[in-house]
Image (cartoon, rainbow, N blue to C red; front, side, top):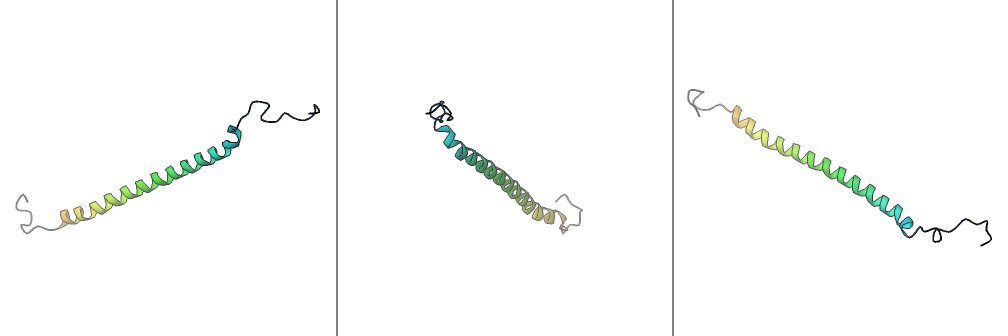
Length: 73
């Protein structure tokens, strides 16, 4: 070392964590994106399930009874 070179990472106390940082950041971004996609998918599934259940219920409620409303059926 001639005195004009910057110190290398090993000499200033930075260990292998610096090399792993880009991988950890990438994993965090992918995990966050995956969680967002999963959340949106589950919300969409819930909405479709409610609509699928509401359709037959609504049709059943709208159907005219044989008694034409004179009983409590």
